[in-house]
Length: 333
Image (cartoon, rainbow, N blue to C red; front, side):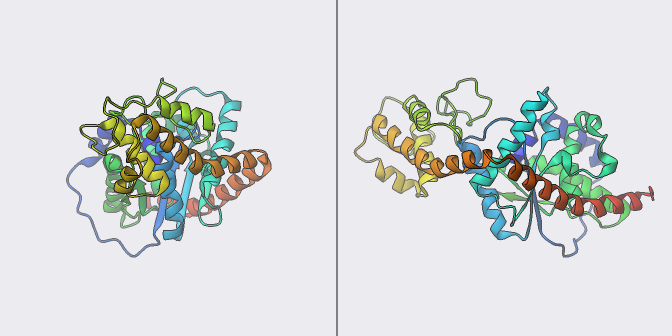
């Protein structure tokens, strides 16, 4: 979700990357540096089951594996389309509550609002950021000297511009930026419940296609009841031949923490209609404590604002010396 939602302008990436590519740069060995993870998520739209299993769970795990982790709520990216200011402000707080409820721990990672963590000299650069969308994304990563960025396999190419810019800067001004590496997440390809040929999406016009973290048990059951399967009632895992049923099995395995084979075994003797209810119940059980925590956190606006303020202060502390050193290297100071 994170980098996918940030990097929608796939065509722009290719164009801008081509402009910077030039002769093949020789990658110089990097000095040992603190491993620093960075990723971002737009505040608009409620995360769905695919976002949770594919990105947010990975974010939570990386907190335990790396000593320096930054997660940004990228509100500057969200205003590339018109937003109601009051709605956007509430969406930022709601996304903060969702991430905290899912397990993002401000004691183990830096959770911050993108627009509040830009250094003072950048505060009037919003318009430029919108016109150079891919460059803004690259700047977010490089500004904190990030060494690792979690992405799915289909997003590795999105990192190429960032890596090219880091190499080109280092080639011209001396080794400064780490060339960030992609952390290939075990991105679970959760498919649309209504069309298993495409991924589950927040923007799907079919309201029954996407299961959101905040859906009620009744809504979850309804969506799984209407999930597309086929005319064979047996539960099997054959993604090529039986995409709909296989999607249900994959979801069941992921939310219940089971191997695919065991998920299939638990469906033995059930027709697909009954199996849908089994999967729906597993999803409801997985999201129930998260939903309770979201509702609790949303009642304490002051706490959410404090989390973002503290995170932004930490992010500024990391970003300021990097920005100052860059200016010095290129001759601005």
